[in-house]
Length: 392
Image 1 (cartoon, rainbow, N blue to C red):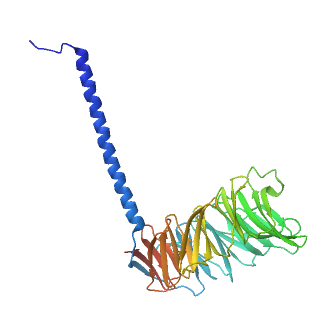
Image 2 (tube, rainbow, N blue to C red):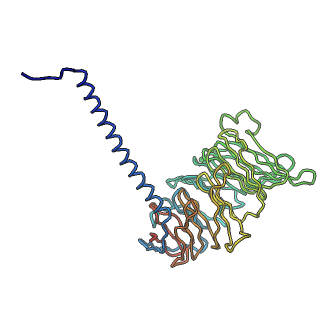
Image 3 (tube, one colour):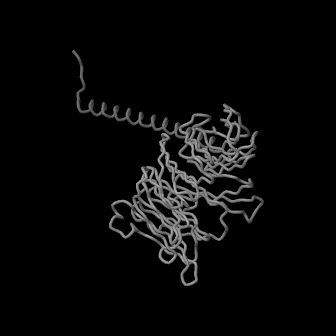
């Protein structure tokens, strides 16, 4: 005779209790494992974040011969070389993406994502190159003074006319999309222009004389549906009586910053930009550098032994980092993870928390330094050699 439980409900209760206890123990087990993994990741992150490199090794080298007038700049993870004879985009050591030739005395370059716009100062032509090297020539008919380009190849060109300054906007095929007439009496003289990456918005910094006083304004024009019914596509603007803004820059499609002689102003909005911050500046700005949704102002340091101070701000004008350094820089690059400060003989590499990862000299005279595709790897360029290096 098989004996069973006299109380089936009691058996069910014990079984459910065992199942519940097993589930709880399993949850606790995986929680502890997850916590251990998280602590390991945090520890590794903190280690890498604070790790200091003392030297570097050359991992690859490519011999190259450039004209003495060649200049270099980084754009969208690539390197652009341009001179009076032409321009070349390349990736890494020697992987050429495209190469074009032209004849210019003083080429001016603007980039946005994969597009590059090049114009000779005072000429009536703008060359636009896409990511595959397809080049289009835009005939502006008037001398070009300044240019800005968007991610689709839309170009804004500041043009010199006899009685006024004009700002024309063209698509990448060279068709004129819009035109603005700028006079000292009405709008003022355009000091700087910037297109949003989408090409929908144009920001212009103006300066003018009003009753013997110097005044300025920042104006925004929308070439999309929102601006179609507005006079000259004008959608918003701000006047300033005590500041001049020689620099204006879209950091993304909805954030733009204007840098003045005594203030920095941030605006936000993808259709009608509005003021979000207005901060006064009591020191003279030495340089301005831009990163992804952020920008840095360089000042001469009046206190301490270091010569310079870098203040890093987000797109809303909030200070993220203030760091002093002594190196007499020739260029500064702001990437997603780090800040490169360098001249032809040495460099400082720091992360966004201000920890110096490397400080040291180069074996060769360096014209440009850019981050490589993986952590602690970089490309350095001089007139004759391009080198891939790894920090150690």
